[in-house]
Length: 187
Image 1 (cartoon, one colour):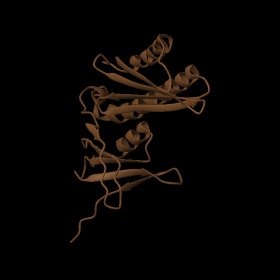
Image 2 (tube, helix red, strand yellow):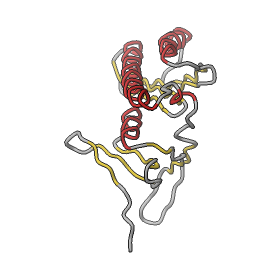
Image 3 (cartoon, helix red, strand yellow):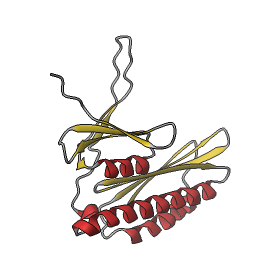
């Protein structure tokens, strides 16, 4: 795994770098091939709180976790625990689903990356758009889209519905359950 570790308002010491690499290296046991995988770690200190954010784009899955603590080493430990829970939850659900269809390991090896690029853009015509994201719409079912949304820690997720071949959105409702938005054909 290739590490991209950077600090905001903190110097990334060799000890911190070694600790991060050692802890994140434990996650490699969950995947078959991580040689070309990059791991983006951002450590920041703001008003005495130390935050660690880790993003690991894998084929078909983006693992992301963030945590804040008074101690940077403790924050790193908390982030790793979150990532391990995400991985176990995702692999259990995906394996259960694909065990019936065959080839569970294919989910992590042959799938295309979900996000291709993110572009910052600003317009000034009253309603200001401060960021534009572009990504490949991977065909999937609503259940897999909910998994992706939870893995990213977002409240909604846009995807291409594999059954209808239309763009759909899943979202987390205020009651904790999930909703699905499908386009309606105008006649």
